[in-house]
Image (tube, rainbow, N blue to C red; front, side, top):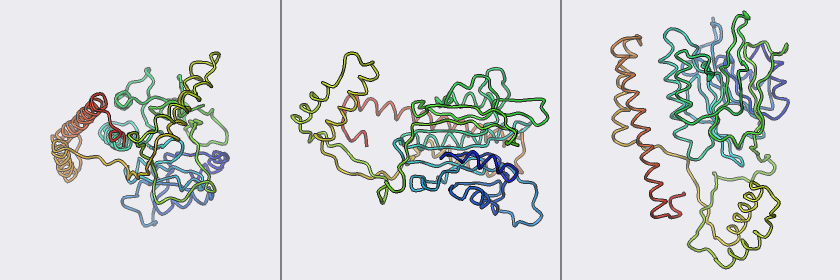
Length: 374
């Protein structure tokens, strides 16, 4: 950050959410970001966030991640406690509820696969916790490529992860590179913006290399359909407010009358998508006037671990503690045992999530009720 200040300022000229990886700041230096961009708020983690250095005889800065946004949007942003010194996440309230995860995953080296898998596990847990109420956007320097032309151990882990969660790039990256080694001898595509819902994106681009950008990476940018209310138009609230529609108390006569009148607006010459949009709008209008609603408050998703998952979770914590006390030796029986336990934990989580979805679908088909959609 300190060596690329002018470029960072240029990125912030338009109101943007900026995700930074490898800012190289220590915990006591985080204020530099606010000094550089005084009109931006941020959520930043550093390499020493869990064990801050005292500022004397500092080594060279290492890694670190940050998400920055215009401070006028801060009332719509919530910083999430989940993550680590490589992963930071926020939720953003707007016309879409968004969960943004910014990650700087480990560089590929001899013994990096385990740490890389651990970071993917953390991201998986964040997505699992927030996916029901938020559109997920995962971005950052993932130090693995989705290109088919390369397949090292990180690439394989990343491709399996993306496929399993149904993530897609915000646009067609083709084979354009995002990282250029300073030696000029190599380049790769390792920086991504990933999501499950492409409808929230309008445009995307991978920047070209620039004389003002001293980094080995080029920015990956996307424009979205997200609309964030200004502070002046935002109503004060004690919490996020939602309304429950009381369909049992619907005024059928008013609903039918308003819907019939609204559907007359459909024009035969309109495209199918325009006709569907008109139908959707008229359904919403008729619902608003004919179906009573009462306000409710959602406290956010809470993951409820089953006894089976709790058993595997407890086993993982115990094995990790034992492996850590042994000095974290690679290719050791305790290391192998821990990886096996973590795999069992992830499998049990995914199986139970799939079972829960299937049960919900069956309930919706057999005994639909508005309570299922709270």
